[in-house]
Image (cartoon, rainbow, N blue to C red):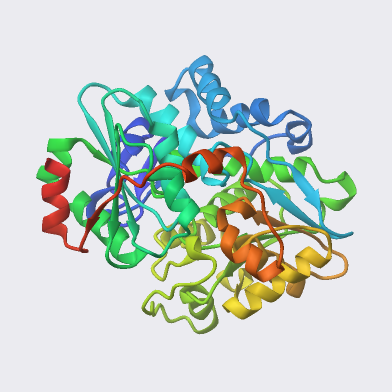
Length: 424
């Protein structure tokens, strides 16, 4: 598999280099030179999740990794289901929260850990990543206890849910967590600065586990196929998928799935009040504002890292960006959406509620809709209980971490401070 740097197309790497390196020159994102057209999609959809995913990722990555090794990587990563729940006659929820940290990031995080363990070579590795909520837990648990791999996770202090924080800030060992006195965009900017520091990168073997790493992105493609596989065949023709969008890695994966041949008619990029992309699609002006804290905190991103990959896909496929629907909801609208879902008999959380409402608003009578549920409702226990006036029991995975003390360090959003911390 060959990839190029979107900012500097002359920089070319293979899959192993892209996984180890994370980002290219000038913080450029790596992108596949070729996205194949998969043959006989219907036959592929008849396969179980793991076997189908092995074939999909094998077709994309090619013979760079031996088939038996790649198949083992997928099998070790995808050890949990992604069921499709019927909400009403035309709307379904793809539940991506049945993994060990109860969020969709488990798919990408676990596959990346498998990929990095396979291609790492010699020397130590430091994973540096920023999280707005769920990435941190998925990465921490995927890499916890792996030999010669240290993980440092930055997150905005006070701007993720208490249960999200407990899930990845209580592990210790090779996992270090840092509460940064700022917002997610500042955390992400610190990660980018670290990658621009050649000496630092070399000294500590720097890598990232954000959705900027191609291995995480490729893993996410697989659950779009799983969603369509669970639909009745007669409902696959006019399919609309609504994606809760923060850093836009999830949407990028869906667009790659469509490029591979998955029958998705169109996508809706559903955002909260951090509406850089909806405004850009409306007026053509890229004008990020200060990040706003919302109920759907994992989407509190005003400078989405993966957006260049979205534009690259539209350009290469000859698609029109104006055909990408994008909706922004306020917290009040999010609360109303959560209540509307619950009235239909489906319990969700703020991110999924936004995707549901955007889909409901835009779905045509002839279409079938799927929205992505990216986290277990209990991860947002306080807000879900308040909004719906119910009591949510804690799943065992959350309950055991909730009883443990936080082990996080704290830091100002200052690169010199972070650099010294990483070199300790």
